[in-house]
Image (cartoon, rainbow, N blue to C red; front, side, top):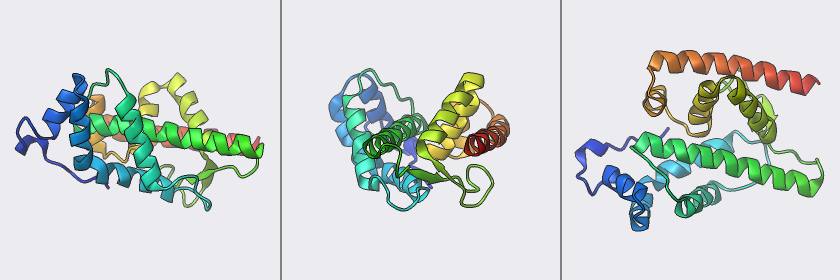
Amino acid sequence: MLCYIDMTTRGPEGISGLLVAWSKGDEEALNELMPLVYADLRGIARRQLRRQSAGQIVSSGTLAHEAYLKLVHGRGIRCQNRAHFFALCSQMIRQILVDHARKRNYAKRGGGQVEVALDEALLGTRARGVEVEALDEALTSLAKIDARKARVVELRFFGGLSVEETAEVLEISEETITRDWRMAKIWLFRELAAKADG
């Protein structure tokens, strides 16, 4: 679970101030921000790697560092608050995992597919493995049908955001997030099962 950093008790030089400064192009603000949020970022990475089958493709430290490098090279990124920042990080971590899986699969020509466990946190089932690329493709398909539900999965599964944090990022009610999460899990389960059977 993410650490809950109370940005309201910090002055303008705290996390909120750093996010605003970074959004305005102050690259030094990101350097000051990262030590404050690195443990959270590494926690997101650890959770993702725990879901993978044996033979992990990267370490949590590597995943966190690659996300940091993407942040450093990002231009015009706007973050309103902590939840938006971790939403951005969840997108980056998803893409890094998919990129690593694709490279590994390309090198092995289809062998050694990287799998992630779709446990009860995602689909309500126990230890059901699926390839990272298959999950990414399913989420991309879901986004074409219902972008908000796909975003909910990305934020909750890849980003580790709570229902409350996800509602804050998407600016919708917690009840809507809960409903979207439930429906998206059902849709993904069917989509991934159909691909596995096909």
